[in-house]
Image 1 (cartoon, rainbow, N blue to C red):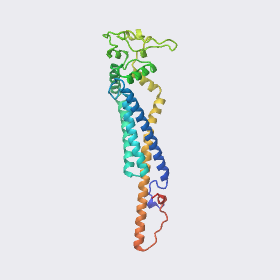
Image 2: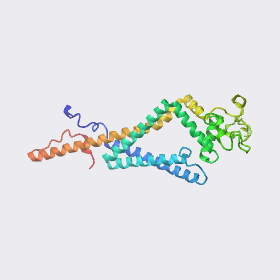
Image 3: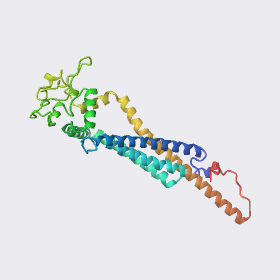
Image 4: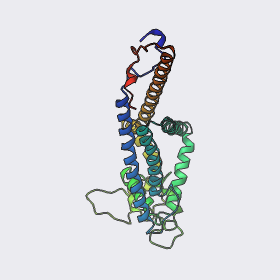
Length: 296
């Protein structure tokens, strides 16, 4: 290729059209099917959740979050599948820009959460308190909270006293749970039989006096400390979330560029054919490049 033609074809001679097409179709189809699976799981979970009297808050309903995530993944990936099959530049660019915007929003959100760390922790604690207030009315939140308190050896959001806002665990409540915490807060010996009343009358006690009975630290700080102690796992999770989106943007960009090069090369060839016919001369086909193999 001559030096003057170096700006005409950016990736045409370097990347295979079929390779890029197959890669983008595979990428989009995988996430399309994954989005359909997430959506199906969310719908099933929501149907099961509606059998019980639970809350409407999206934060407290993982099924709602799964449904929203599944819809986004399904729709965006379907646009990618359709665009890559039809070689539609408008759809390809829409797919690329949507993925890029999602990636940018996630990065900005993560950076803002780190910059405003105290406000982020307060936001989490407020939402956990909302969940604790309705602990026995929302089975989704109850299961999640019990799991977190057991696995991270914590109790409540900010600390164990958060449980005093629950109508059954408040010290003014008439039942046996009054002024206590759920058994998932208790320090349990794995060989011992679980005592579901081990948190009885602990809310009004001092931390040092009950730390051998229940976990006194809050779950927000416990989870954050675990993340900092396991930074390699955290980095792997972040990479697993962000890298596939970056790969989709990169594949889309290369494919859009490839198609634009092919269109430009064919337009140039057609112009050469027209000029050759007008002048009554033969057209030189040497050097037309790999774009001549573009399927019709």
